Image (tube, rainbow over all chains, first blue to last red; front, side, top):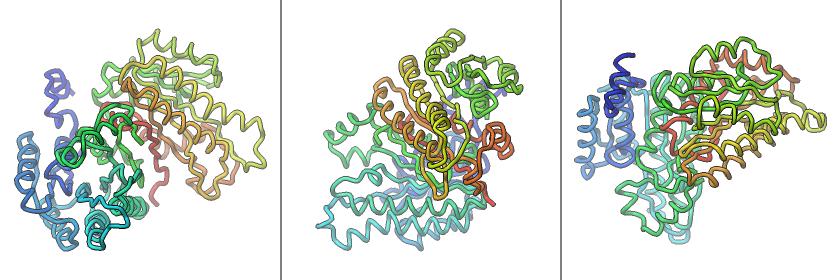
Length: 268
Length: 246
């Protein structure tokens, strides 16, 4: 108790592992964790003592993934960076095997990789575009969920990162929103099937979040519209999302199962 | 769970001390908050009140049960004891009586609606008037979904109404940084498959909760929603899964 008090009184808030070791001894695999929300989730889980596998899709994200690993190690945590394109079932399988090899097992799976949305009206969406969006955001997620059901340790956590677009789609988003909402249904159904091993499966659905990717993909006018419609009057930071994902990953959240937790400042 | 996440925060928790309100008060106090725990008239002290106020961070605040005209005075008493409020949690759960629509007495309907819709509305009203910037308003409420075979129409209706109150209020007070959320749960009768059986007392429900560790878990979830990590959750209802694995 004294050590906690000292850490608190000295303002050493960066070293939260002193205040909470809620995930000590656990292994977390976070897909799409090179940057943005995924990287922040990886850092937040590591702060609570988890060993984190930082997954990135390909070489273009390699430097960012290594940077995320480095920032975790600098804060006293443990992390690995492994590449896998999560629209490819064979690569997902290899990612699970690699993670189990370095950690001994997986306790927490955060499915954050996704996106690459093709914004196109239904009438104009090509079959190839439809397949690509589904492969990454639905089919690949389904495969990962199957592997989790087989390999996750008892007492584990499955967390799918969706998007407020899935709940409130707008013109152009049919293929992307459809894929995301399909994955939400996979997770909610899986929850009942894994409950007997004390594993929970939930969805965390963020609203618009100020990441590099989001800022480059949206206009200022669009962001202003979202901010005006958000009761708390701003966009989310990656930490706003990661702090909720962290809670869902802890033992204290054992009562949450098969749920969709919307994290959007009150927008929906 | 012990932390400093609610250090310096002042909370008011309505609801019987031996029910979920008591467990929530303990959880908030363990996180560093000062807590005014409402003790409605007519609730016997089963020892839960003395146990609660043995924690120096918890004080008991009386009120007239189910009386909307006494809400403002209860808030006055809490503020007088502890100062301006940061967190208000309405954890008073409605009477656990079940019947098909055709058979429910109007008296029971009125009691359920008073407890699960009207009181939460006016507790939220007072809270919205008084709570500090960046405050947290929380309801513990009945699950408003209607699974097949469930005979709690009055509860479900009141829960659905409370869900609307919190979503609208979130929009009305968001500019002050205040969030409004709820935790809902299915009645125990449903989860054990005995939805058609008549009422059980609130005491029996509390005992079952304690046996299953539910109240501690619900309290932990409530403490999370009242704390800094939940700042971006707003206008939401978190359903707790009261189905235990076989």
